[in-house]
Length: 210
Image 1 (spheres, rainbow, N blue to C red):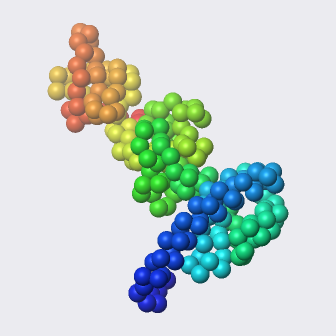
Image 2: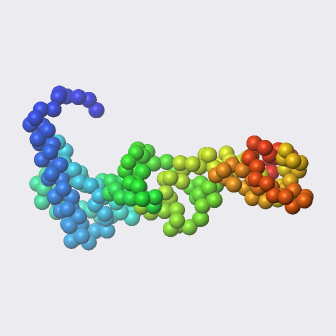
Image 3: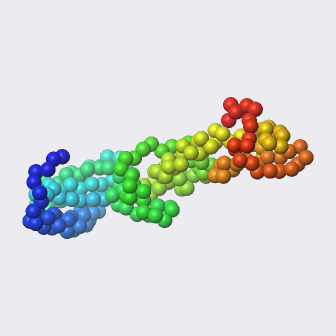
């Protein structure tokens, strides 16, 4: 990409007209797709600056024959029409919406590149493994599963197993609960006394068990 010249008032006016026309073009594309019974979700439509081409972005399950739609839209818009299929996450990014947290989707606000997300990340964070609980607005695994994955992974490596015998400032004790978020463990001594201690105060005789 390079700069040709500074935009003039006329250029900015044309750009604004394009944006306004795109709203109607978007509605027209959706209507035509429904009329032609094509299984796709139109998520965006925009003109090139000179209005010689209309680019329509859509999502769909698998490949679809959109040639009838191209013909219909070309007749309606009077220009060349290009259809671009994108993945589920890109559809959610373009369509917008709210996440399970109640905030605007992260992919809309700031995520520029979609990275690989796995169920392993949810397991590492002790989250319920269910399709409904882990899926985002796109129907795929939520991007936020990656945000704290590395921190949880490090804590889990340091966290003793339940039943493991560990050393403490008060002598040896058995681990009964691990608290990931607080990075502490609850231990029981031979006299049945229970204490919650920081991981830094725990000495593991066999760290490789984790």
